[in-house]
Length: 149
Image (cartoon, rainbow, N blue to C red; front, side, top):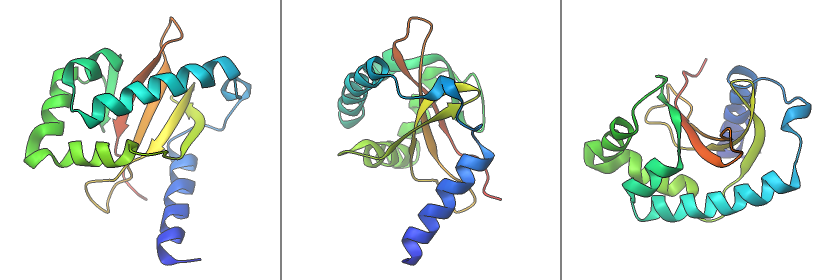
């Protein structure tokens, strides 16, 4: 196994064991949810590619987790993506382009779709989380960077 693949495997394993709870029956594949997610994710990819703030705000969950904070205002998240020369925009764009590997797993005890992104430092992991809202519409729930252990 190459060093890069080994580091990726270690990061994914650590994220699964530290950040998320084991998958229960509630996170099993649901064809309707899968189809809705594919449609949502294509829309999300377009919004990210075009840096469409208004569209992204519409696609965000009302309670958004950002880095290590919870309940972060959408405007603050979007400002931070623009900060430091747009470093986090680039991170987000690179993470969602093409056909990224999305994992079905729980996040905060609710079914979710998770996607690895690039951390700003080797001290952190980076994960994008998507969940369904009360109307069962998919939303962007989080861009978090928990500490590596």
